[in-house]
Image (cartoon, rainbow, N blue to C red; front, side, top):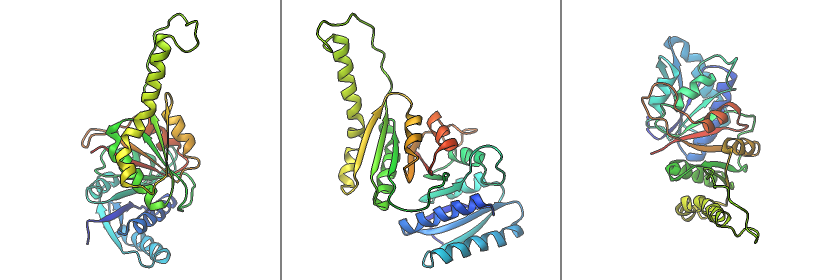
Length: 276
């Protein structure tokens, strides 16, 4: 057994099969063991599901080491425990509403509030291929762990990294217009603020640019609607990465509106990376 592994939750559903396929690809990229976890009330039920999942992985990735593990109880505590040592934990979801089984949407929400490490929620219909860009939602330097994860993903995939930085709109007190266009004090301050906001993502990721010189980076700042910008970008992205600040042990999910929007509607898998 090893502590360096990618963990994936399965339950015999088609949603779980898609998560399994993604998790296997992620394990291959990282050169790690794939650990397949089935949380179930009766251990006797786990055998056929785990055997089928392992056989599928062996057929697609003959050289990938695979472990299987049965956990008694709920999926959320089982996968949260796995996330303590896993380099990545993977779950699947079709969305929220009408989905049953261990990998229903509510599980990804609850797990995101308790995960100790990066959590990949597989949704959308993109195939598990390389080449599509990595999309990073960046709010501040508090998202350093998410930024590092996104750079690593881009390097592993040989893909471009697109950074969407959201800034808080500053209120400018109305003033009489200047006779010379764009030269009033308020307009000058606003222009300075705009330039400063545009610089934030460059300062935030400068160290990572040096550490990953082969990663092509494209960044832009949005004043309003970061969720909308990320959602639109997820149509073409291979994966979208955002930071989460939900505290381990808090009752219920503590996710912001951006995370909720992406978990409900993203067109590609969503990586949620806890702040360190």
